Length: 291
Image 1 (cartoon, one colour):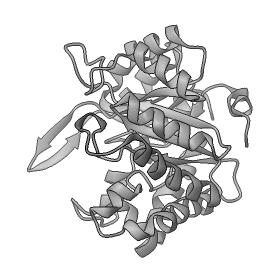
Image 2 (tube, helix red, strand yellow):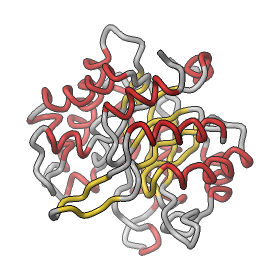
Image 3 (tube, one colour):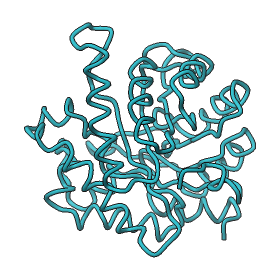
């Protein structure tokens, strides 16, 4: 599946929802690195992926968000980069087997700040390339560079991912500034679009950081700046602390209602991030006329 237009032939594409909270419900301890489960508890990871397939997701992601050399080194798994990434893709592919569901492999930030000068750009590029190559070897249909704040880091990830010959989406967190319309590094939607077009991204969008209400103006601004398809995965409202736990209280029904506005604002790929579950995706695909 090389052609994004084929994905969009039938209108809005339904993505999956959050992974972290779903894995925690399967027993992942708070603070544990989820990606290692690709090797130690693959059946639990596959259950999460399968739940999204069954809920109606047309694209599911992979449990590889924190699987660059930089992130895995913190957990003593720096020598397992290729193995963890490849396994993550293979798990999601198994969950999608026998369906038309596609798998986009997740690449998250390294956690290393380029502006601090402690790492060279080429080192980050090489880390992203190692990850993307393993994901392609696992059979990924596309790659999503997500939850990015620094356009410079995101550009390196996109350029590295593009070398493996798959469609590449890139998604930023806009959670800063008075209007929550800037990334943590101060980048606006318009600036992000310009830099990601230069990097060669095929799809541009936003995920995490805030509830779906805030995604609507962000989406409108991205749409005004580019004709590329737009990827949107909002949180289930704003988090609240209840009995020491982080809780997202927005209902799937309210989320889905707002998603209609998001599509009207120009979104082509719509799913959920923190606090969303297969229930959200099930109602979302019903609301957007997929069933």
